Image 1 (tube, rainbow, N blue to C red):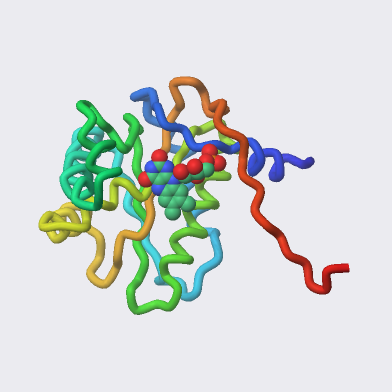
Image 2: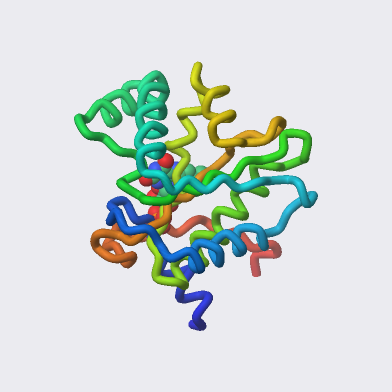
Length: 187
Ligand SMILES: Cc1cc2nc3c(=O)[nH]c(=O)nc-3n(C[C@H](O)[C@H](O)[C@H](O)COP(=O)(O)O)c2cc1C
């Protein structure tokens, strides 16, 4: 395997972070990788970087408040005392899609995936996380859009948590699932 395939194969979601922020040049490189992902039109997406842990804590609380409304599973999980769906990450990057652009959610996802691989290649831990975006589901949506300066017409679609994992970035986890792959013609 080459370096790229190794980074893809060994990347796993990190769910416990040290408070230390990652160096600016690494963040810049990760954001650049996000912007180098395929797009439909140049203004299909924009990025919001949150590096203030107090703001991330507020986002976590808003997300919990909305997330618990989704069902029993979420209510049980998010009601656990001290629950933090951002896992203490010092940096959260939200990717928002231009609602007037086709397939903007796919475009945002492509950026997130590029950032995960870039982070892995730099020894930075990461996790693709929808959780923080629950904050935009309810009454606080407008306030968050305004506070985070997300432009009008853009919808927060996905986020990535970045930082150094407490256990490093090579977290031992369950085996990967293998998906079904069909070939045509089959022989
Ligand atoms: C669209 C999407 C949303 C996700 N949201 C969350 C999330 O909110 N919280 C979380 O801990 N992981 C989240 N994940 C990460 C997945 O749980 C994780 O990628 C999966 O379990 C496979 O593990 P791996 O990333 O270690 O390979 C999300 C993944 C995707 C693709």
